[in-house]
Image (cartoon, rainbow, N blue to C red; front, side, top):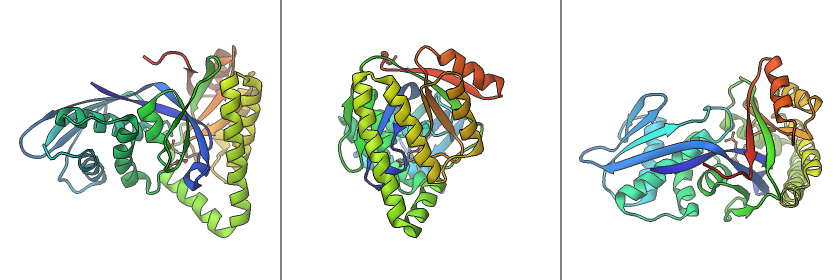
Length: 301
Ligand code: PMV
């Protein structure tokens, strides 16, 4: 059984597309896949959607599947079954977890050995079909697990939290398109290069400081850096009223910091709330938002 993790981005989304650092953390949920060599055309079945795709069909899932099959190497047709336990379209790296699990399962079935970075590279072929210009952070954390520091084109480096990081994750209920938001930020960069480059540099500094604060377990500082990162993301116009509301509710309920996570324009937000996770989740629930606790740095099942 091949596995891969869903994720939250703690710092650095969007800036990471343009060469800056991001810090991402694996969640204790994600995707699993099994593959076996068969005769004929390769086939992909995905649960919970009950969707079956043949590699030679004319659609994006088939194209993404074929790109992963090719990137893994070997030619044997395979039958792949994927099981996903993450909400899709919410910026939690569902697509990357699926892609990494597929790459690993196909490599196992074909008798090819893949490192974590190798699995991530194969999975990025899938991400390119859906996201246009992926930085690679989603597939890197899906493959490595734990907390990583990532820069485009480089290898992921582990960040070891200096204690359990008590996060709460909330879904705004607004579907988000990473591709659309990445394109929107690229347009702003073309229009106002100096301002937007400076914003990216600011986010880069927050991400690097954030990694050091996480390693030292300085949660108050991590929370403040998250708030600042959220403000810079808002200035890139990737926040929404609902994302602002869930971040505000979290801070009022005692979170040390909160920010949107992932592409924005909807999707999810995270709050750092040591000892207050339940209070934050309750505040969100009272306002009609569904969330869950994610304790980063505790063993991943
Ligand atoms: O896939 P999402 O929505 O979690 O966002 C990924 C993070 C971005 O920086 C917005 C895009 C990327 O490729 O890094």
